[in-house]
Image 1 (tube, rainbow, N blue to C red):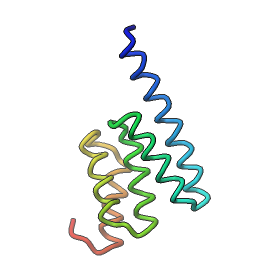
Image 2 (image 1 turned 120 degrees about the horizontal axis):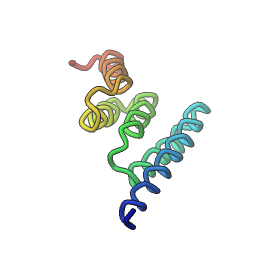
Image 3 (image 1 turned 135 degrees about the horizontal axis):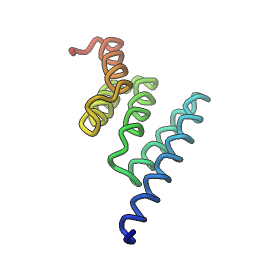
Image 4 (image 1 turned 45 degrees about the vertical axis):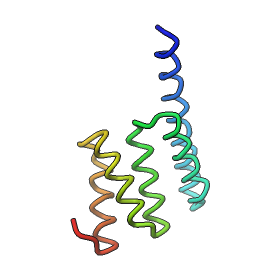
Length: 100
């Protein structure tokens, strides 16, 4: 395994850990810290669909509808069949009265 392959694998692992930390913060309704964790995850792995979904959920829970929709849409660009991204995108559009 090359250095770059090893580094990418390590970054993916760290990104997933940061998403898990963010989820714990979100469960405590500490969305500021949750968003920071999700953004950190995306700095490590910009193709982490779960980080975008979690970020979108945090934005939706803080009434930042456009940012939420953007995050869910990015998750769907990466993984078009991501069931939570689809579900949360539709729920956010409905909640904020935005066109589908």
